Image (cartoon, rainbow, N blue to C red):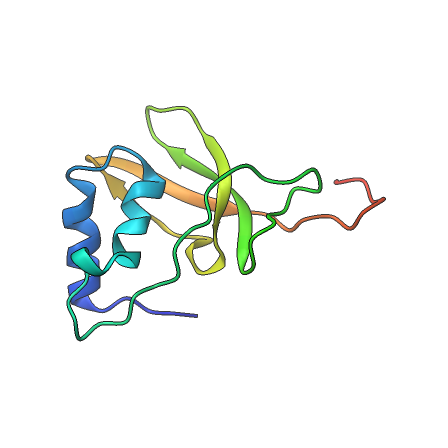
Length: 109
């Protein structure tokens, strides 16, 4: 699991002032313009729709509900290290809730 440095947390927070979505805010630490040169960039979120099995076609991505208080929940693909993340965007609490895709032929429970 990756951990965020203090500088990356600040970069994430600063990115949130102009981003109005959870995915855009999380993506701030994947872009060289928002992360100091001495920090490691995180892998970008694939975004896009989850596949028919409740997973994502992009490697190391999982299907997740991006839940933002006062807004509609968005279901999309996120980089697996963002699963379980929570915080605030534009002073509204958010959470990233991922799930495990089912195998073909299985029924989700």
